[in-house]
Length: 531
Image (tube, rainbow, N blue to C red):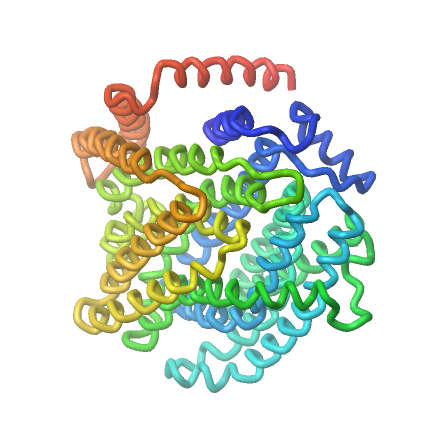
């Protein structure tokens, strides 16, 4: 309901790109069926993007909870280390081509032939890079495993090479749909990939294949997902979108030029995301990687609402001839995301122990402190996508380079200094400090580029902090260990009410907004009842 209301509010703050804003998701499916490349409105795009993230979160949560228990910290650490190592190498399988292609697709959305030409121009170098890097990872798996002194990594890394080939192609096509402001197809792609990956991984691990089976299950999911994304692109955009003949034309060269800075920023962000696990594996052992990555894998899901809203709003910032973008939804989106992400802070700080015990089970007691320390990172993961993607679609990705490089350097420096001394919590501290720098830097980029005002954001942060303190008080009163089912329910309800009351008292949420929420709920309930 909250995500739908945010989408409705954003629709009111910008002119819809299509006149049929009230048409349902089923209407989009019918429109796709006749291959009409009409952009979706912001609410519909946000709804689709959120559905994609919810689908990913649901399948990932089920799979992660199964794997951490079925494999245990040591074997799960092997799996997580293979993911992290392959993730670092996968930077070279994209070269910034996917986000660059999406940017130029966004500039030509609505023109089917032009969109197909841009996708084809990006697909040629993308396919070549993906194939080359995947083959290289497969061949070098033995050497990489020797660096960690872990022979058990060899086959997970080889399976990871197949997985990353499918994944990078699937994400390429998904980004082209985001650039077209047609996120509906991405939901079908995500459901296909996630269901295959989850089913195959669980089956292989249950048969005793261990971390290698988990990674081959991932490979199956992404190879099927990539093939399906390719087929869907041909169906909705045309075969011209995946034509490989003719060499690299003007569009390919434009994409590659803009891909340069995007490769640096996306690559640096990928390094930032995976470097903690890699350094923990090198400086400690695979069991430590499992203890660090198990809660990290779960909290990644908590940033999905921000990613969903960013995918809906950011492409509208791309400048089109005769259609200047509006920036008000960006400001509103940041405010809403702060209020949504702040609801996660108190539970992660106060109830980290019960959460780890409930979700991860025995053997992960050392993950509790990691989860608590990563709370600032969890909060910021919901906000960072909207400001970073805004810079990409505004065509100012080069301004991001110093920020992302400094973020990675800061994280690596803190990790190397702290992990040998205080263990895995050193990686969590490094992540928090570096990511805070990253988000502040991107806010300053948007401030300079489009005049984004930071004062209202600071006020929202201050009021949200008061609300978090109110929620934390309720959770502390209930207790921090041995929670019963009733305690979980009372804490969730009571803490949420305390949070909402504090926002009302501080006047962050106005009476007018409360009436809008009420009216929106009234409009939605008859529809749901009729359905």
